[in-house]
Length: 307
Image (cartoon, rainbow, N blue to C red; front, side, top):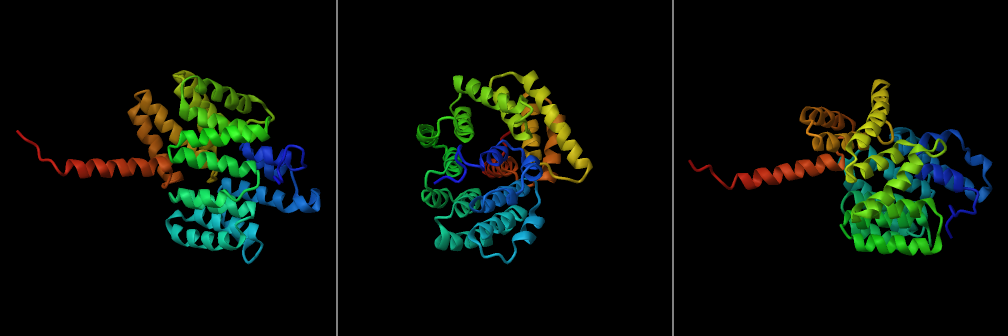
């Protein structure tokens, strides 16, 4: 059974989390106000929100020494996010925890996130396959299939979820992620979802705004994307000034690199890339650029100029 079903008392805090409203998850809710069975799931959402805000040390300290599978899983994810270079230990600990508590939803989500981040997609999917009609697991499965470039499987997963969760926010988001990969008229459909979330005061967040920006880039509406991106970058600048890390700072900077490159603003793109290196030197876009650069240099080394 999904603890975050639409008719349960966790629906609002759960929606706020997946809308990217991480500070709201922390400020507007207290686990103690929920019924006893839902206090731990509410606490887990708050811990995940803190991880999204970069509070790795604080989360690790809070859950240290607790043998509850949910909190062990949170600790593994926190340690991985804090130091992705030490991924081997996180993967090993995740495998051990999954072996003894693989039916636990938090274990499935956190450990599969670590596995997938390391490119161990099949391992992540095998663990997520144990879920019991849980949309959080479905959403992560969709994301992993997209990382595998298996849009067909991502589409199938999202479609199946629509059959048992008609009006779910997560299903709408999952379909939008798939639509951004399928392209064509699906860009406009995804734009409507992200724009509605980004512009409504009750649901707005940097994450939704970035989804809107990405859709507008694909639709060729570059001036509109640029205006929205400047709004997101203002938030990044404020966080940098206060030595804080915003939940979506790295994604805003990555999108700025892409948009400035498309607009031919080479200098600005390079400046933003340098900021991204400081915020998240292991961002997926930076890793991809480094990999492609190394491949190019390897290919170039095989040839000598002929004059």
